[in-house]
Length: 153
Image 1 (spheres, rainbow, N blue to C red):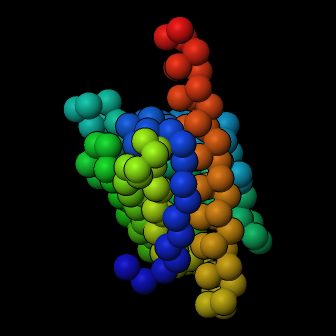
Image 2 (spheres, one colour):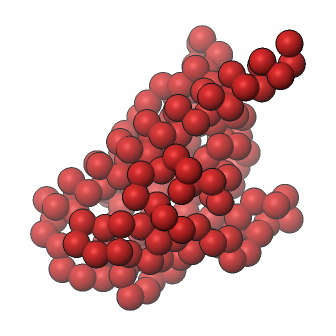
């Protein structure tokens, strides 16, 4: 996939990281810039099949819809429905168990806005989105796992 790919390590198990990443409605609580998530359709398992997002962009507020595919607990992939703000967007999270019982999180993203943005700015935006999302996802998953462990004691 052309675009930006980054990885991060989490002490949380892949299942926990997957569950946090799949809970799209909670993104405004932990993902920088995401102000609205509306679940438009669900899968038979209750996961979001299609969702509408509003985010604070560099120059303006951006709205877009994403269609999701899941391979629990290994991968979440998405593609944008072309719209006024986004011409094309695709990405994925991969969750790989590591030797310490945690997770290597891989995040790939390619964004083509429907308005003119120089290539280097687009790549910088992708990097910033990915770094922020990985940091938030890691923190949220580790907090969820800590809370779950404390509740089982």
